Length: 177
Image (cartoon, rainbow, N blue to C red; front, side, top):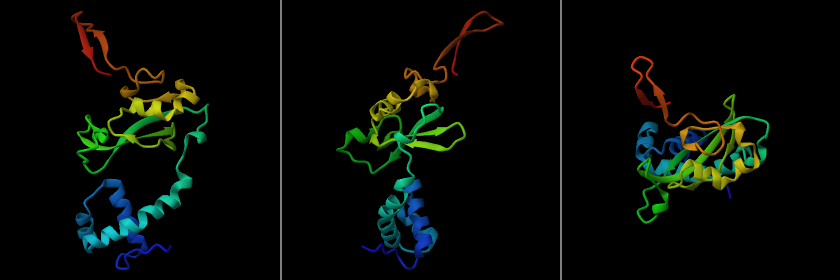
């Protein structure tokens, strides 16, 4: 089946429109206004090219099998927002106060993308998503770095809450790292 994008946009602008929609979750009417076309034209471009982009880029998405056990990685999660499905409570993220899917990404110390997890329900914390992926079970946890949400996974994390003594007054203060 041949992919048909809106001729008024052309291939290049259809790709730009689709990537803009997917990356920022902007309203189609807003994108249409920026490109001087109608909202249905944007919808046709997004519908036509989303699947095609997935097929073209699938070989470039890093997977767990591509990870080197000797390399240090930095991991973090993000919530990919979706429509607010009232009946799908597992998609609701209390932290973000919206629905979506949680995805983890890891990069090396040079900032090169090394791994993207499969999406999990938005209600799952980054630590739970990491455990579900199983990637840290097969690699040395000490070679991984994460934010405070990963404390307890044997990876390098910042200090969650540190008690220090004020050198001037001798009183104990609670500081955040």
